[in-house]
Length: 268
Image: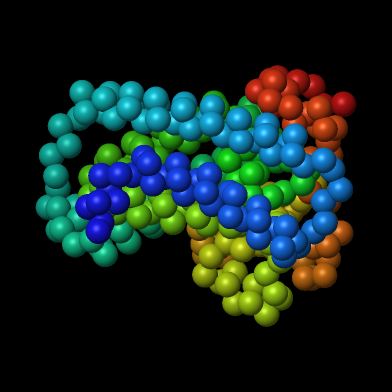
């Protein structure tokens, strides 16, 4: 089963990506957390187009990064890595911890440095958070993240099955955590100790910067709790939470051409 998934990773990834977005958009319609006011079809269309460009960049960068690293590094397996990677569970656990820690640090760096933040504002400029927001990233940000994570995977020499399972899990949780699905308060209180829930991550998309610079986790909130970046507000307060940025809030700002140029535009 794991071997089959690894062999058909690309097809499964895109099927899960776009199928997952469609599934959660349907769930959002049935169980909305926040009732959006804007005409969402245009925003959906532009977000999905941007994600398609980003994933094209991702596959190109993955190939070039792998070719380059293999040309300069022999990748002779160390005794420790060989021992760990000989068992799927231990290989997956190592990859999971390494990827989560790297993604957490990378996310904080993108918030801290002005140039990188300008790229990341494309993701945060969405004023109505839903499943399509999960892949609303500038292609240059996608390329940079891909170089980092691909390099880490190759250096760890993890088996393909572990890599595939991690990224499939990451994809599903990302779509779920950005979705506008109402999770009952009691269930959310339990789930947010294990995975990133929509209410936990929506706070990261608040226009108030003190909340924007919190809740950085990708799959789990553990690193946010460990490093003191986890925040929360009362459950009912999420209904009135303003998301997006304090600028770039006009519908035209979510048009594809403006999203691609947004890092170089001046906020008004």
